[in-house]
Length: 214
Image 1 (tube, rainbow, N blue to C red):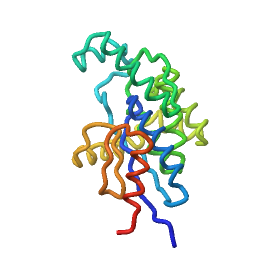
Image 2 (image 1 turned 180 degrees about the vertical axis):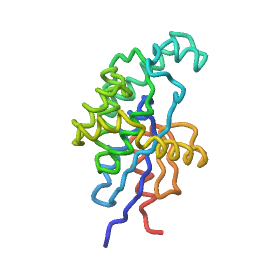
Image 3 (image 1 turned 90 degrees about the vertical axis):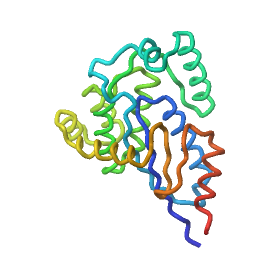
Image 4 (image 1 turned 30 degrees about the vertical axis):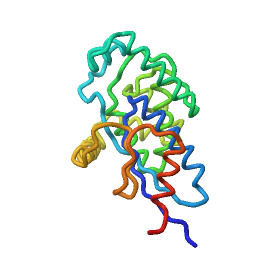
């Protein structure tokens, strides 16, 4: 019997720590069902901070303003995030800045076309959340693209242009119109929606349920 193929859209932002946790968790779930289903994984753009300037801002003051929390509350949330990350094998570092991620989404769009989306997504999440690097910096993007198996000269040309900007904005508009307002959001076969950084067991159960013959 042929295995079913699931088309999965992983809507997320590089700047989102829960997306890093969600992807690590989702990959564990995929490993558990890989003998039962085939998966086509596509990363889709969502910007938590679309108006962020190129120089970024300090993390804690920004989160205090954005969510109306005290510095202590922000640090408590960060501690919980580190714990959740450790549980699925993602090690968060000390990130001091929030950066704009639009150019990272442009690179991810290209990486998806080239079949290297997962590799670049992992590299971007690690660079941002574990190493505190700027995912909008041209040199960082070119370096990470090359490490993900992409052509560095082509990556440099993309970063220095506005290539794929229209495509990214269109995909962002599409997901807003579909009602996505928080990330990560996983959409399976365009119909089944899994919201939030679920534990591997929850993702696994959802994938098995969707793949079950109807």
